[in-house]
Length: 292
Image (cartoon, rainbow, N blue to C red; front, side, top):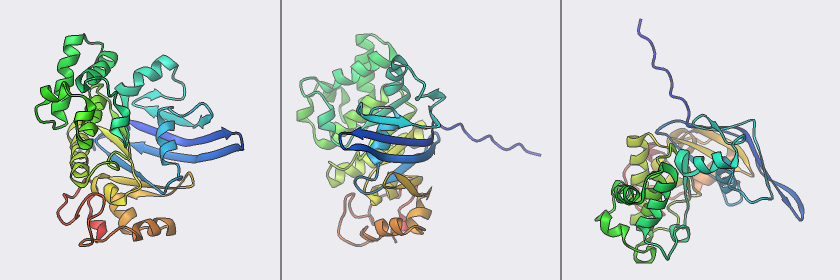
């Protein structure tokens, strides 16, 4: 009798995660008892309208919210490390090494006065403890991994000389150089044009598949989630209203709120949307067949 292969351990697990903001107008709850699990090589998509709690979720996962935010959970663990119990030094080591984050406006996240290679190298020095020369080499290697043409040349460039899509690739290279096991992506394609968006989605999909990187991708765009996610979690007013495999949730939504979100997505053959004509776009990890 053959033995079954044990399931891999999750790289991220949260149980009853909640966020409350203490404001001058009183407390405001942004996230209410959210449970999530992410496994190596898996992309979890998080969707919802503005104000649904998506950004609060990402900030809470790595404890990067303003001081007025109160984060509670029964369990919040990255690759065996409890974020809730972590001391400040442990959190600094975890951010960038165990888990990395990319945002929707890459130019705002890069220092305009420093060459991009130097910015990536500083992350390598911080999280890998290497010297200046080795860090510079790792920066060029990271740029090559994210598909940059002539990475040594790009390493010497300043952010303002690069396109939006190239700047986002720089941010992904910066995230990867710390060798994280989890990548948190907050609307990573929103500020990009159609071609750049498709390229970034292809890159993230390849990173998850080839490097076993767990990804939590937040987006208001269901077409983006349909392209890349394995599972999807739908948020409304800080609560999960639906959660499951992407082709189940988006193809056969059970909740009225999810059906409303899906109903406004252009069907195949319609005008080009945020990631271009889906008749020509590659099918992602979750598959885009739910679009019709």
